Amino acid sequence: MPTRYHIPNTLETWKWPRQLNPHYIDVKEVSSAWLRSFQAFSPKAQDAYDRCDFSLLASLAYPYHNKERLRTGCDLMNVFFVFDEYSDVANGDQVQEMANIVMDALRNPHTPRPKDEWIGGEVTRQFWELAIKTASPPSQKRFIETYGAYTQSVVQQAVDRINKHIPTIQEYLQVRRNNIGATPAFAMIELEMNLPDDVVHHPAVEELSVLATDIIILGNDIVSYNVEQARGDGDYNIVTIVMHENKVDIHGAMDWLYEHHKVLEGKFMDIYENKIPRFSELVDEQLGQYVDGLGNWVRANDQWAFESERYFGKRGREIQRTRWVTLLPKQVLEEIGPQVVDDSKL
Image (cartoon, rainbow, N blue to C red; front, top):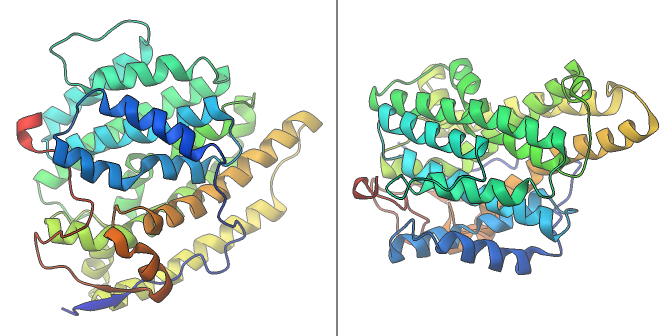
């Protein structure tokens, strides 16, 4: 097994540049304080969590939101990763119970959660109670629908992890499209929009959403692979799956992922430039903002991977420049954002 490998620069020709919401610092402070108030993690784990800087991800992903809507985006990233970190150390039944709690909290945002319930329920409820004050009705509807699919796919991920199941590339992408959480995050793009269902569900727009999701999956798994394999959780990663299915080493997997990314990028740009439907002046303007938001999300996810300490510790900018990574020994996660909860917290 090679000890060093090269991360391909998959976004070298991507149309959308890095953009950062000007309210990032102010909103991060408020959203981070809100999350810390729940004491969901130990002090050491909270420090690791803070270094991930999920508010930065939201601020890159939603560069034009006002303060109130950016707060919704930042809070959502916290909600996502509370569920993600707890579910990562739980079995299928435990994750199903968490998913049920989360969805009940979203459907009943004005009803406080039981005091002895898993903390994720109240975190989710408070997030949504505030969010709906500035979220358009269509965006609320789509968020609830897509978040339900997301939670169920995380349940399936937990089952596959326990069973040590390594899926095929296509099987993995099919499930991962939901559990990466992209579609609920895309609903946040339209917080101030009133896009009708037939616009968002137009075949061309839906295909653009799937392509953006797949591109994010490839990028996310490429940068997270080192930490995940060191943690012993690398089987559920497209890098491992490509190595297994194509019988190649990590270099061969990275080459395949780079080429596949370029195919997806070509399809995305073809739809973006030639096949976006036309409706009315107002709808077309909002739809244009929405599809640009999809493209920007791809850039945001990639930038955050290197600017936060989630995957590369303090060496993110250096690795973004050189693209070279040293493979971590199993269970050695020095200076890298670790898994932040343990079984005792469930």
